[in-house]
Length: 169
Image (cartoon, rainbow, N blue to C red; front, top):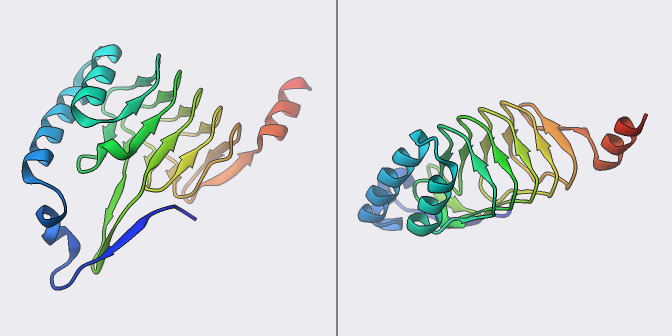
């Protein structure tokens, strides 16, 4: 189960009430920084921008590929470990706006993780150290350390022990 906090809303759906939950100017700043970061090929610059202006925690030698989209509204709730690769066009969400509520959840991606292209990571998810997430996966629950997962809905393809045994045979 994902670890999210739920906040009920009254009246119109929660997305119509967006600026009651987050500052308009914060969204504008985040949008500008993320759009620049999505297109820059300079990994160190992208990490520095995201850490400085968005409050994301990003480990050394972590690579966010072109077109990666961190959460525009709550990027400070995203932590990515060291030496991790986030593949092309991946979306990392720390929020969900629904009809009667909105939810927030921290996203924690461990060290030495590989996330394939076109993946969506939902709020409240932890991806353990050394995990591999195949391309086009919907990460809707925690990923154990060292596991390989993939698909929509996400399924465990190999556990860490199965991966280790497969590599040694």
